[in-house]
Length: 490
Image (cartoon, rainbow, N blue to C red; front, side):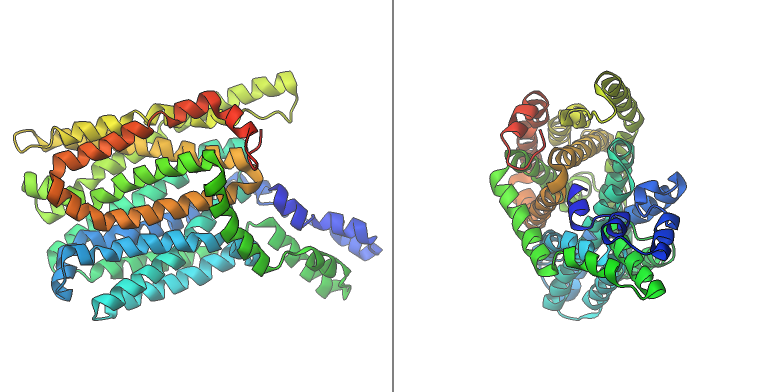
């Protein structure tokens, strides 16, 4: 937020600097606060609901093809490993495209990016389902991921525009849930579509959902990025008064898009190389996404091969993980109340500007981190046809709960730890985890076939167990680590 203030001082400040005439002063005094944080709670929740739908859409598109992988592979006359590239390349495209979202949305505004990239995203999905060659499908799935990533990552910026630090404790979990519900609701639908024999409807359903989301953005989502709103306000003043001093003053301080792109691409990579906080939480998120996206193909080996469920019934098993995602939201009021109480006490003792240490954001992950290895080992060694599949479904709920807790904590901790450079820290984490997920979607099929379900899940459980201490380490030593950082706030 502070960076925005440096690049685009408020319109009031511009008027003061320029010593405007009386009519400009009147216009200044009559103007409403442009900051999205001043919106009514209803307006903010309405806008937040729309941006969470954007996150749901992009996640949905990433995995729905996996539900009909056999039918698609049969039509293109390729192996399922080759067809799994449709999901893998989409994820890799999402990782690469995320580098461009912040510079573009900071130059043209959130809504311009939403509308333009969702339209191109829809075109790519349309072409990918109509093109008769596998190579064409894979290319346009990759491009759909590139353009889908921009509204996905820009949505996080919109959340930050509207809600302050304390409010994000309550709001962000709902946005995070939509990011996971999309990828793990879609295979359920995709499985039934594939079972029906008309697998192309997986893409048609994505297009219909995208059309609904695009309509909501066009009709009901207001622009939230304050610097762009200030520029628009200055343009109105220029038109009304024929005095372009305000507009020229703002233009003089604007950072060129080329420089924003250099910073937007370079800084996330540098932070991945230099910042241990970003490194460790990114690796943790990579492990989580590796496990999650291996399940896109792994559930078939568990529930179809071992338990003999149909393709559609196997898709229904994803509901267990979604229940786990949603169950983590039940902790949100508890965490919010604890956070608010501690913040109030701290401000009573030290003043209204006091903020809590960033490590309080790790409460979610302290609850959730142990659930990941426990659930994976549980699933690994109870997945036999002699043991009811309800055992593995319950372990999926526990796993989903743990994933959501760790994801919420990781993002909120990175946002609070890096403040001014939070966008770069999050972009770096997003890029790395989606590229890793894209690779693992393809690799997971040989893993399950060569290692078997039990040892594959055991290997993943060992990875999760190795990473589980990270939230506890940062809860104890985070302040010291941040004090040694070049970019983190102390």
